[in-house]
Amino acid sequence: MIVFDGRGIVLDVEGTTSSIAFVYDVLFPFARQRLAEFLVGHWADPAVADLAASIIHEAGAPAENSAPPQGPFSPSQGASAALELMNRDAKFGPLKDLQGRIWRSGFESGELVAHVFEDVPAALDAWSGSGLDVRIYSSGSIEAQKLFFAHTFRGDLTPFLRGHYDTTTGPKREAASYRQIAADMDLQPRQVLFVSDIGEELDAARQAGMMTALADRPGNRPASSVFDHDPVASFAEIVT
Image (cartoon, rainbow, N blue to C red):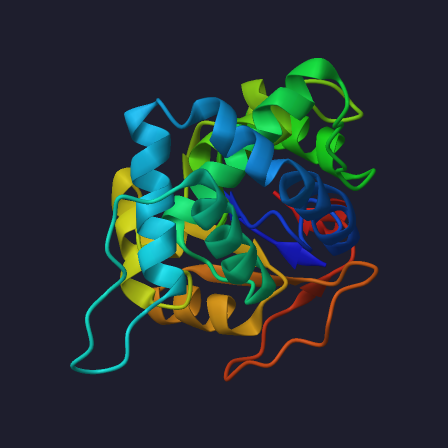
């Protein structure tokens, strides 16, 4: 159990609010199966073409002193490059943006319904109702986060969330990212609790001055960290 008397809570998603299995067994396969079709259908959209170009460059990251891939590119090249980065589990912003655009159609059609652990809706309701500033920090794009929490099996949870952060704020394993989040929340880092299943992320948050809690959820991998982070198997174990 953790007693928290601060003013803000920042949550990871995968392995924290929601199962790792849902992300890897449902969301990622959904995006994989629709990559090529989506890119063909949206290739005339300059924003999508720019995302694909960035993904192609990243997937073909050149060796030193060699030239990067040259355009113009095709949708099939974009799809192949995106699959390559997904196979690497790359936390690359343009890839996450593209995935979010693909997932939108699934969530809006009802084909995708986001998983959250049973304790999450009640905790979000209680925390926000008590005046706590609750936000999300995930490697998934902000667009994808908003879609995810708007379409859970327990309904729309976005009214309980005041903000979202992704890797455009900074890498999740660097302390500066957490200082920036605290500043954006207009709070001191010590007033914020960060909850994640990844030890290196928690270490970075602790280095920034935040309180931390290790999400001990079913299916999570053992965490590796420098600092000790109190584990919680349920958000009900966070007493505010």
